Length: 232
Ligand code: ATP
Image (cartoon, rainbow, N blue to C red; front, side, top):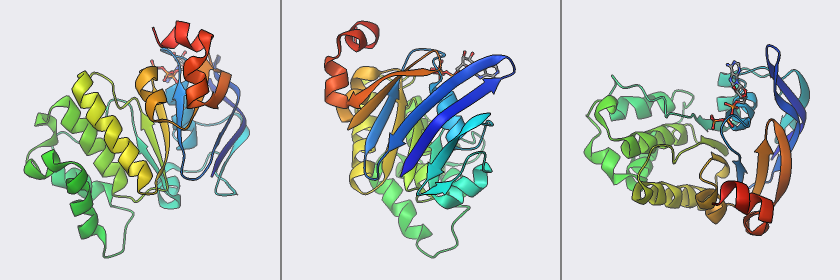
C-alpha cells in the first residue's frame, strides 16, 4: 500500500532521515519505534507532504506521492493524527469532527459521526463542549475521530500515548486495534515501544535517522538490542 524508498529529509544542514526504506501492506498495523529525535515525526510529515523530501520516493497504492500537497493526500486516503493532537481548542467537539470531514461530499457523513461516537462515547457526551476543555485522553480521542471523518485508507498516528495515564493508553490502543480490524491500515509512531509492539503486526526501529532493524513485531520484541534500548 505504501512504499518508502531511499528517502532523505534535511532541515537545513541537519540530515534527519537517511535513505530510509519502509513498506506497509494493506490491512497491517506497522509501528515505527525509536527514541527522542530519531526521526519518527519527520517520517510521518514526509509521507503527509508537510516537509519536503530531498531525494527518494514515496508510493501510495502504486502512485508516486513524493512531495504531493497535504490536502491532496487527504483526498487520496491518508489521514494524519499529529503529535500533540493539534485539535482546535476554541471549537466544539462536533465542529472539530466536521472539519475532519471537509474532503467529503457524500451523504454518509452523518452516519460517520455516529460511528466515531460509538468508538468514543465520551466524545458524544461532550459534543457541544469546547475541545480545549477536554482531558488529554479525550483530546487524543477527538484527534483520532477527526482523522477518521475523512475515511482514510491509511492512518498515520504520531505518539498517541504521549502524556496519558496507562489506563487511558490501553483504551486508545484497543481502539486503534478496532479501527484496524474495520479495515484501516495503520502506521503507528511510538516511544512507548512495549504498547506499540503489543498491537502491531510488524515494526521498524529508527535511530538517528536510520532504520536499524525491522521485522515481525513479536521478533522485534524478543530482540536483545531492542529490549535493552526500548523495553526497559
Ligand atoms: P520525538 O519523539 O522527540 O518527536 P522524533 O523521532 O519524532 O522525536 P523528529 O521530530 O522527526 O524525531 O526529529 C528528527 C531530527 O530532526 C531531530 O534531530 C530534530 O532535532 C530535527 N528536527 C526536527 N524538526 C526540525 C526543524 N523544524 N528544524 C530543524 N531540525 C528539526
